[in-house]
Image (cartoon, rainbow, N blue to C red; front, side, top):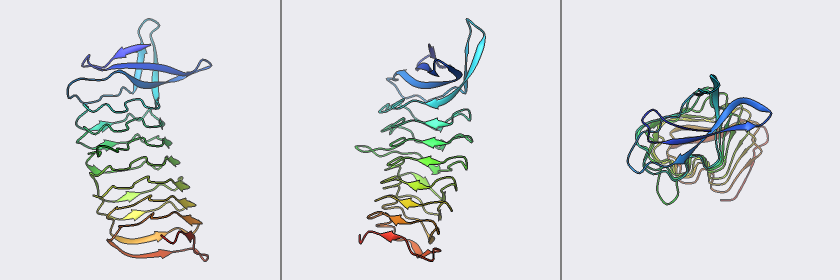
Length: 232
C-alpha cells in the first residue's frame, strides 16, 4: 500500500509487519525528494477503501537512508516503537532538532549515523526511558547534539562507535544503572563535563571508549570489582 504525504511530494510505502499481525505498519520511503523538504512521518494511516486506521509502529531498515534533501526538524511520532538498521543513515541535510518517540524501544545499528558527511541535528538528544537497545554506531558523527546525555536504565549494552564523534555534547553523561558493557570508541571525542561515573554492573569497557573526552572532571567506578578495560 502506498500513500503520499500532505505535501504530495514524498511517497511512503507501508508494509504490514506480518500477514498475521495487522496491528501496525512499517514505513519507508518509496521516492526520495529531489529538492529540500521537511520529513513528516505520519502517526497513522487510514485505508480509505476499508475505512480502517493503522498506527505506524516501526521505521524500516534503510527507510530513509542517504536521503540528503531533508531539512529542518525530525519528529518521529509516538506510535513508533522501533527504528530500523540504518534508517536515517547519512541523511545529513537535517539542521534542526531530533525528537524521538516516547514509546521507543529499539534504535537500530547505524540508525542516525553519518560517515562521508556528518549529521547536523541540533539541540539536546533525549533518549526516552522506554529504550532498551541502542545499536552500534547509532549516532556516530552527529556533531550538533549539545547539552546532557542520559542513557536509560533499560539499556544494558552500548555498542561500538555508538556516540563516536558527537563532539558538541557539553553537559553531563549519565549511564544506565544496568549497563554491562561499553563498546570500543563508544564515546570517542565527546566533550562531556562533570564526573564520569561507571555503574556497578559494568564488566567491560572497549578500546578507546572515552578517548579524547578531555573535559571530564574525574572518572569513578562504583563497582567493588573494577571493570576490565583495554589498555587503550
